[in-house]
Length: 267
Image 1 (tube, rainbow, N blue to C red):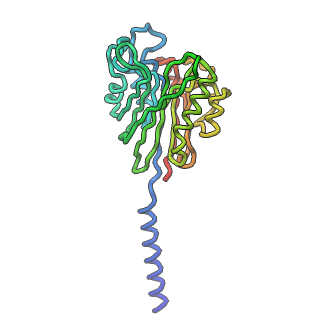
Image 2 (image 1 turned 90 degrees about the horizontal axis):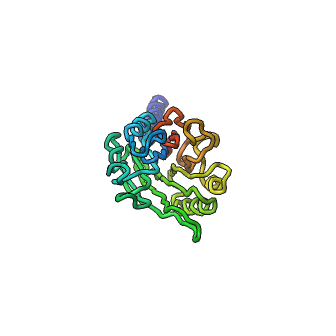
Image 3 (image 1 turned 90 degrees about the vertical axis):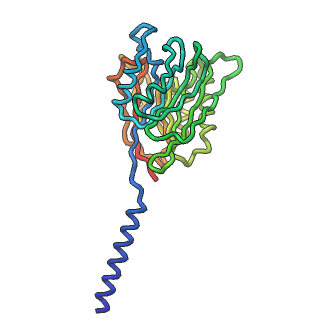
């Protein structure tokens, strides 16, 4: 009788332990990330006065992305019909958004932005450095803190200089410096880095982050892509990379192909 009672108690403890473990175990959360230089929604095969946000929306929809890093956005500029492009994208996609101006342009602004299916808790823009005596357009890094199923994910978007290799490397170094305090966090950065994998700026970034995907997943030119300048980087400790893809079929809306990556968010 004593032995029987002991077995019953043991089974009860085991059952309770399993139940508590199930309650404590956080479900794995898959997320899809897209990085897309949209060329202010002017299809390169069309005249400069054609703005086609609907094509950009269709591409983002096709990706099923929860997080989108967008470069070359117009906001209230004359050339884009005084439209706040990121707001229109967000409203039609049912997403949250944050726009970061890099330069004033034609009565409005030109810059980068983030779309998110999850609320954006905080977003901060950081100026990227130039080098004295080397002409360059102002560039920024945008970083958002986004809570996904109670877990914080930091999502960055940037658009690096395209003219000078020294400026590219200096800006890449600044990206790493700014993001340094987030070394132990879930961090993903999408952007147009204007550099092929062999360049110093990309090699420097690869010392600190993983590249989500193949280095020969070319993104430009859109008709017959021959080089990769668009990337999604991430910190692997609390993110598990699943797969990547370049959307080669979506080659009308911009002079860049969008790049996608899927991850699992780890506790």
